Structure formats: structure tokens, C-alpha cells
Length: 88
Image (cartoon, rainbow, N blue to C red; front, side):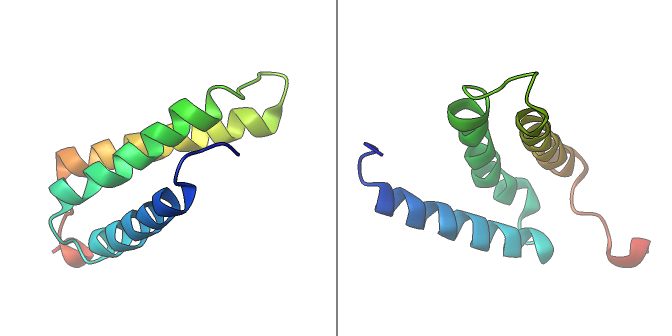
């Protein structure tokens, strides 16, 4: 693909996704945990989804909107916090 040290970046991505997702599930430092996940989604949006965006391709449109929803959800989680378990 021509991407330098792709294997290293793939492992970094795997670690960020797994540990960040687990930290969000268990509400561990939520306000700090979302930023690596936000950066991963933002890079995916800018380098993958927007260059291949086409209104004539419904799959491209849905993929781009799905990433935007993820970015919005992470920002919402950052601003509101993790909440309480079972709404108590």
C-alpha cells in the first residue's frame, strides 16, 4: 500500500480500540479516554471516508455519516460524562 510501518500503526490502532472501548464500558476516566478514540475516528474520516465520498454511492454516504455519528457520540460522552449505573 505504500504506507510506512503499517504493521506498527495497525497494532497501535488495535490497542487504542480495545483498551479505549473497555475503558468506556467500565467508565474509567471517560473524559480522557474518548480522545484517542476521537483521534482514530477523525483520521479515518479525513484519510479514508472523505477522499472516497460520493453522493451517488449510498454505501459511501452511510459510512461517512456513521463516522460522523461516532464523533458526535464521543463528544457528547465527553460533555455529559459517563452517567450513573441504572440511572440511580
